[in-house]
Image 1 (cartoon, helix red, strand yellow):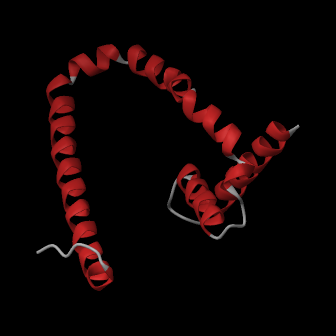
Image 2 (image 1 turned 90 degrees about the vertical axis):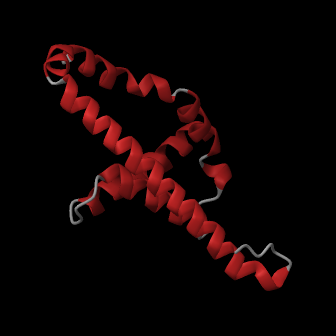
Image 3 (image 1 turned 60 degrees about the vertical axis):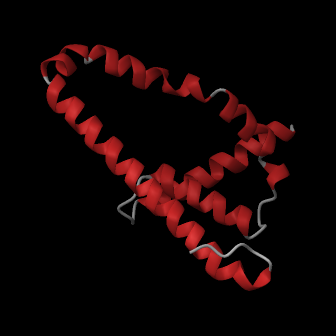
Length: 125
């Protein structure tokens, strides 16, 4: 019965997130994750209330990518026809992702140095 309550809570948050997404230019899944994060952060939802189902979903995440993998395989001919533009997009997004991650980490380290320098934290230049 505990699992059903956890699934109902997660799906309820997803349903509310989808409803909110109708009014925002964001995907419902993103809104739902942010909503669940905020509920956990504000302690409205306790981690134990979703932990079992969330762990199950994370352990079996690869299963949820099977439909996307099949769709890619069905479009293999289209990918081969446009291989060079596809590879260019992949390379460009790889570099942009690495750069954004590096800048975000540098900003986080800088921010931690500023916030915790006087509290025993490590101040970095």
